[in-house]
Length: 411
Image (cartoon, rainbow, N blue to C red; front, side, top):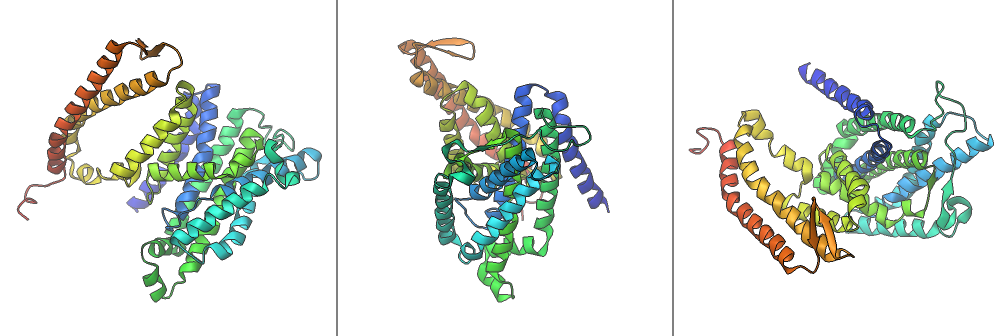
């Protein structure tokens, strides 16, 4: 009973956060970023249903996102022309249905295989659909894409969704609904068996479950929610192009899921927020933000294979034992020089890339041709790196102390 109340409270808090965000960040830029986050969260969670829960590495997941978005825009055009008449609040569902239909067709043959074969099939399908979008201009609109107008159609309680804030609240509701249903899917027998097929398909077959059928069900569910994300994208931007179908978009959602933490339900949400912030904010300050994204992904693969969510869950034992506070000071001792090392490294990278002779960084003017500036930044970076490395043993000892109860050493 208490567990059920705790879960309901958690979901209520999640909905409250979604609805309350614009009250604290009400600028045009903030609302735009929140809309992008909402789309990315559903898209990343749908991808996690494939890779994190089902073990199906896909390089063409953008197909279902893009196809759902294209049908959503065409539906907006039909509403504008008066051919159909319903509120645009159902547009994401239209995109989801088309994403589901596409997943049923493609999954009927792609889910017969797993592993590398499945990944190559998904890559081939993705490239095929992306190339077709430039050929079948009547539906995909060629390089220019297709655009619509979300303000036509019947009002929804007097709202015409002309403002981005109105779209955000609609997106927030859809994010909540999609998140709830994707979580509930993980609790169904199909969702549980998807984990079993991911870990050991032979054993799943041995106890009477068809690995292909389990993969097919997960694949279709993933396509449905990816299409919903595509429908939200169409509503937010009122246009969609070939870029929403290509490998770059598929790669982006893979990064979201992996950096956030595959296998953890909250992982893709974290990854979607991080990548959206990097894309929306960091790109405004640096042309090299994709380089930093690549470095972040590389470091995640090397040192955090379970992503940010895995890093958070590593502290569960210390949290339950009440020893988490023992890590506060060691984290500060290691984190401060590590942060200084990161800032110094960014300064050197940006200084080497700047077009002018002077680079303004954190209120300091640095000259590209100044040997003194280079030596100063390099010295700070080396000193911070050595300090970080020296403090790691202390952090390791504190970690073992926080995760070990008295008497565990003897056992």
